[in-house]
Length: 174
Image (cartoon, rainbow, N blue to C red):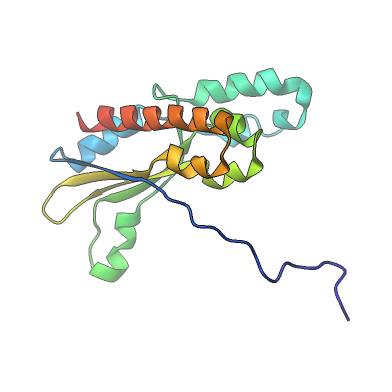
């Protein structure tokens, strides 16, 4: 019996070039993480989950989300203690946290032009300490991720994200 739904057997694929950014510092891991998190708000989808279903409540939703942003204009969606996970492989934890950060209002400014941009929003950032004590902060440059869409409106928002990310990291390592 054949299904009424057909799947594409030969998916399309394309290569994209992504610029990876790495910052290095001799500051203490705990201090870097503390300064980073101090600049970020906390995303709480439950605060607007019902309101977002009503187009008449758009301004209310925007106010709620805007209030969740930190001084960087960004917020934390999740923090994963990747270093803790390494206990199962190395027998001890490592200082390493992965952050999922962004701003739903910023994402909406891009995805209104191409919903495919939602694959890259929110962004990921990794903060970790190397074996010699150096702390590194790494992420993929937003303009390189979103540049694949070839849309000047998305590009403008992505360039603003580049600046926000750079400013965020500068505040964490200095």
